[in-house]
Length: 369
Image (tube, rainbow, N blue to C red):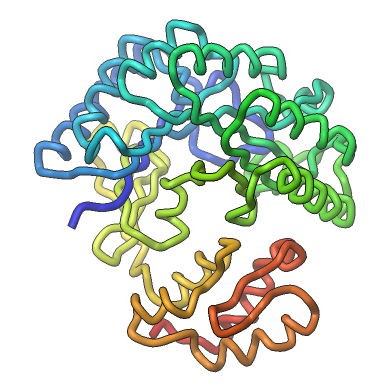
């Protein structure tokens, strides 16, 4: 059976954001061409062996940092593995990289969804995050992509960042809506180990209560303006939920290419080491153990507004939601953190703010089944 999706990692950035813990490095055009050519061969080989994906996602790093000739070859190779023309084909861009030529190149090679890293429309907030492109560049990027025929646009927004207030957040969300975004990802800033923010936290960070207020503000504003929440941090116009990310949250199989990329095939999880040179030498992926058991499936599904459903659980595992889990849900429901009924278990907005703690409590007495 073909995996449902494929993730392709481009590990290059012009500069490293102080909050980012994804594998990326600075490099020259020649090194990027070597990597793109190597990756193109791997993708063509996979297609030659019969791999066909319903979703392709170029992430990073910064995929739009690749030289145009290298990108053209890589996009052509990736498209050989697409299941059909109706597939979701996503490409991440830094807004400042989107020239009319790049927009035309992406459209010509079948890209039908672009994710842009806005983070904030407020200039002071973007400077605090170390971001290069501002709202003006993002607006220009959107217009160029739309002119090239790519209308399925997703914008990334960060919550709980330095200097952010409910008012400035609404300004950012309004910018996204007025620009025509079909999808908005709104993530709370996490200080990840090994990042510059972890070593030296920036001044002006909202405290925990303020972060919660910003999350609730974002959820409410987006709902009022036609963006339905379907996952903890993801909101979309009708029909524009990310099909690729839903593969992850449904614990379906997916391929992965590139250093630092993680995959899930035939019930086993694995990753490539975060080492570009090793990847170019053909290093094998590292096994991460089994995946797709009930506990993992429940943990992932509880990220969704749809939650852990009784019918889907029974269909996949041959049993419904365990009684122990429903018993653990009762006091959490009494605290108005979730809804547990015959249809399943679903966290609400308040519960999403405590999702890790709630999920751990629900699964405390559950084996892998």
